[in-house]
Length: 129
Image 1 (tube, rainbow, N blue to C red):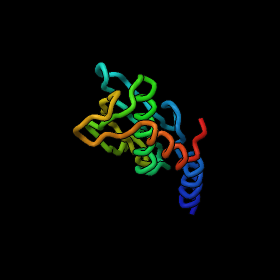
Image 2 (image 1 turned 90 degrees about the vertical axis):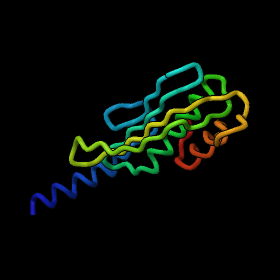
Image 3 (image 1 turned 45 degrees about the vertical axis):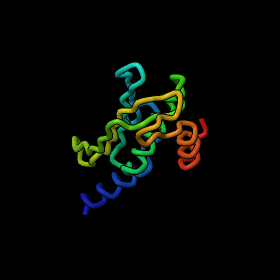
């Protein structure tokens, strides 16, 4: 019975600690790195209480921010990986994307408009900054 109570308390504690949008720390977050002139690797690490769809949204949000911060308006996803880190009793979702940024809308591929992604995902997740 004690083990069941411990498990329930742990789950409730983790639910209250769902990953928020911030640079990577103890409870997850984003990382990014320039890997070329207009190419970036963006990752978002959730914690044991995070859902993959939210982690994916936060990776896209960071991709939009990186695009705008570097003077571009559009980006395409060159590669996307959805992973599950199992280094603890609670699997942690991770989304890694490589993006290519463009000043103008590229004629090929499936470009995302960074301003649109930024505003829609901030609104969806209640992020004001």
